[in-house]
Length: 281
Image 1 (cartoon, rainbow, N blue to C red):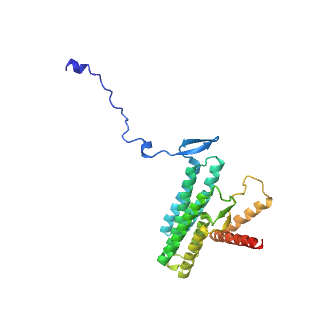
Image 2: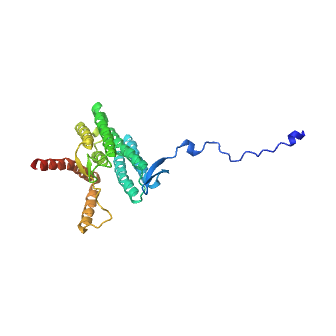
Image 3: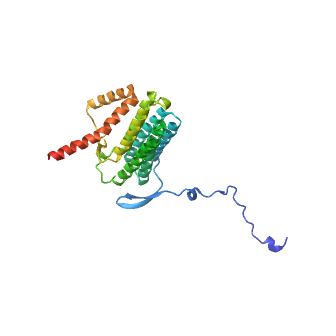
């Protein structure tokens, strides 16, 4: 070995745990959005865990409803849609209570609603009854899905200007509840597969398309957003809640169907009442 070789500095061996894959932030871009703090606009990275976790649960419930419907388990599919409704009502309230609202959460919630209350009810209804009607059946299902998308898009663009006490058009969760409870009631009656009367399939196809159109109709619906759950209420309200729960436990699918059909009819009745007041004045 020469002296020149002996004078070369020894190189450190490579670390034993050198990464063999690129860092995670190179594979998944970190989310960053502008927020207002103390009157200043600042940029924050990351997303809030709790409200988006609840939204993800609602998204999963909607996806499971589609899977259950394709497997012929229509009762589980209907229950999954109602579970998605509960989670959809929780994520926004929890975000406001914990001051964790964000633009990302709003967009994520809207996309989850499209799956749980737009695509899932239509596919469950198609798997149960509309598939036997050919083009008429899938056309009715598509009308519902398209109207749900239009309803959510319109809601997102009017969110800062619309009256908080009223919705314009039937809310997509309420529309999904009508579809899900209809499937649930008929499933309990044994109207599944070959035992499903053709007249019933035709009627529910018309119902599916009509409910879809109600979502984009210029009809007011009470939003129930002004209810203060932390305030005091008359004692009779608690008694009415107990009676309502008792009625639901008698036959949940039938009670849900009647309740949400009544809510769907309340909008046109309210609109007629407004037209009468305008004509009198």
